[in-house]
Image (cartoon, rainbow, N blue to C red; front, side):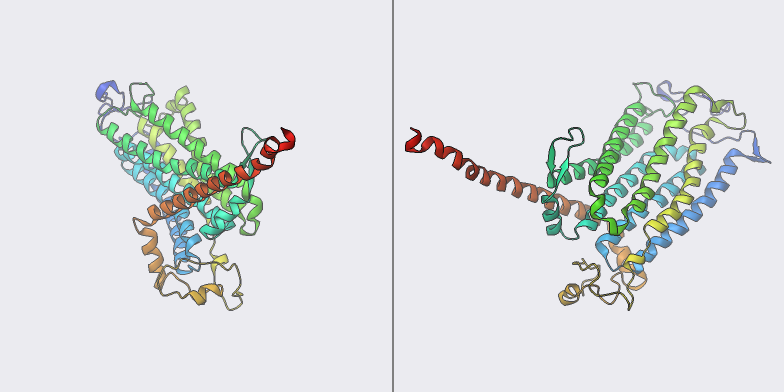
Length: 399
């Protein structure tokens, strides 16, 4: 499957044709006197620098202009997807032996961003837990596979929440498994044979990704009419492009490698074909996507000015710092940002290891308790609804 140099041609453990330790050895000239490996590092390095500058600049502006931490912290997690992908891809290009160990963790960051996107959409429709419960309790949605049947909005939210949450959890498990099985020499990136873990981890990851993406698409299609003022389409497309393009490229390279098309290029080594070229494309495509993210998740809706009415989008903000009084919260926007000097408080909360875990736990408690209360209410109503029909059989006239 492509040219290997004499030093790298030795088979790996358990018969895998890929060496246990991958070495990037020079192929023929690709551009001028540069090999593809060095050309790739230059192009991907420039792309990485641009993406990091744009995305960390956007995240920094949200941190310094944090008037709504509940939404903006989620936006920062979504924006973090691009720098994470970019850095892991660039490191894999420079050090090919790290590719297999790092590749799986890009899916974990993808899952975290997808979950944050779902909760951001929920915040757009209802900012507090109580309002979320009331909003979704009042809705009925069509079932995907049985359009004639209806599903209660809370049940729909619970199904969507679990469908999206499983993605970062399962991909974290597959990423760790990929690292462990590679260290034990039973992963084998170059083989889809069933006695290697590669094929099974790919199947699990693909199924998990499909379930999560389908859930978020269904949620968006059902709820887009309730959040038009937040312009969710641009946010959805910007995020969907990242996931969709990477998934499409995986399929394309799988076909090209299967047909042996890329192996005919003499200037590319096996490492270039299997790892270098796909990761370079990812690095390049993240540049235009980063500018789309810059537009879709801009800070303008959260900026405070003297012309901003105090009643604009009133809500109970969960302040980053603790000195926000109730009176200021009830009157609408507080007359200062809540991220602290240079956004340092916002960054501290965002980088806190327990912040995301606590957000997930609070969402679980909210949905679980709301569904339990809803089911209890339905059971209480059932005897009342049955009493009129029972009177026909219990009355003396009917005897």
